[in-house]
Length: 280
Image 1 (cartoon, rainbow, N blue to C red):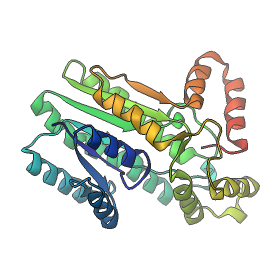
Image 2 (cartoon, rainbow, N blue to C red):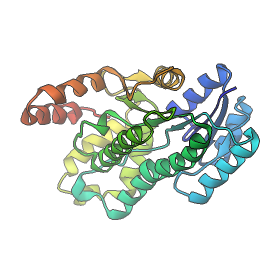
Image 3 (cartoon, rainbow, N blue to C red):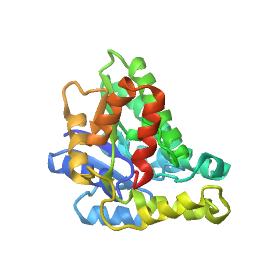
């Protein structure tokens, strides 16, 4: 039985990936920041669910210690999925918000990977999957903090892929576009927390952002369901020779090729246009 630790499993892609791998016979250590979410997952059959806050080093270490004690020191895969999006123009994002965004999206992922790598090196095999984004290679306006964290994850994974070459350890990125998850409600909370909308030069844009973030249902064309995205994650984790990148949704595929074909000025125009009415 293969074992995996997944961060950010309270809902969305992490939750659905955990459920699908569990159905395939994996031992899934699905983790959540809040204890009530852990108990909910256990009641749903994910009995190995653990509490793990990626912004807390002690919490990360405790989760790994518990997992390894229960598996006899074995871990086959890590899916670093936990994260959220801080909306706001670069000029409006305070240092505190940027630090919080990086603690969750980058530093927590980095620390989990370091701990997993100790096990993988001893075993001589392992699988790392990191949840990036279309915004990890195609920067779009009003998402500077989030863009920056995803660009950082891409650089980390590309580097680690070189450093694990030939070791039996595989590193992959999943790069979703619009997915039907709780991304927007969480982003709305952080927008209100850190952005002084009415005092900003971009106040009118933020009002449009509020309309999008408060809307019910999908607001972006080609939105994919969370279970469908999770199926791609399962594919990456079970493939004999996984790809370095898994492009998920039509917009991700489109912009992956556009950034290689178009001059910068035209690509910039298309990226701005992509978020005018909705965005991610």
